Amino acid sequence: MISFPNCKINLGLHVVGKRPDGYHDLETLFMPVDELRDELEIVEGPLSMVQDGIVLDNVPDDNLCMKAWRLLHEEFGIPAASIRLKKNIPFGAGLGGGSSDAAFTLKMLNEMFSLGLTLDDLERRAARLGADCAFFIRNQVAYATGIGDQLQPLSDFPILNSRFSIQIEIPEGEHVSTKEAYAGLKRDLFGAAHPDLREAIRRPIEEWRDLIVNDFEASVFPAHPAIAALKEEMYRRGALYASMTGSGAAVFGIFRK
Image 1 (cartoon, rainbow, N blue to C red):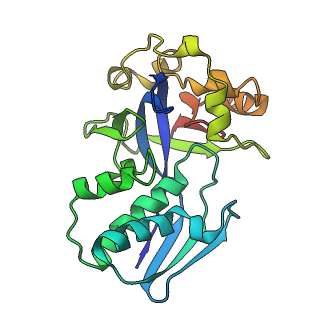
Image 2: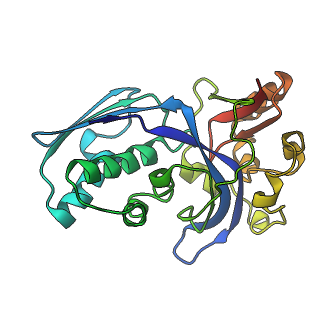
């Protein structure tokens, strides 16, 4: 079985506050993007994990795909599987590639071994693998709160049509770890007043520049001016809206076709 896990972008990202468990409460809009996808193949066979494409900084046994297999193996006793992952989505970019791979692995194994898990069942298990893994189960635009795991699907999202294209780029050599991005956050940012994202996206896209913000830009841009410069370059090229996604380093622009 083969699938093609896609990436995501964040339309706005607000850091609401720090939790007692050390995590941060967020609010954001997750949007799936098909322009950039990995290739994932799973077949029954000796337990193995092969990674190719972009070189990852982890050993195959620590890949989230393997963790997804272990989760279902421990619960349901599913057979061994051979997993091959070709990485096209850069890691450390805020694009959710690893989370997508894990979620797609759960969905594929559920189908392969006829586990009968519902989408709600899969979301609960995906959330155990990573904060934004659950989003990729339904893989549709969603308003996310908590640590990114509380999802409200937005089936009436207004710009999903053929009139717009999304371009995603990463400045050469740039990499932002999630730890770095959070470490640079200023506490006076927490809970800052922002427009409701669910309402802001219903404004004309040309107005988003003044309405929809990613709080991590204030943390990341001073240390990574090339990322800030890429955002401004997107606007010079004619983007209707541009932003860093997640905690960086990727920047996306929405353009009219």
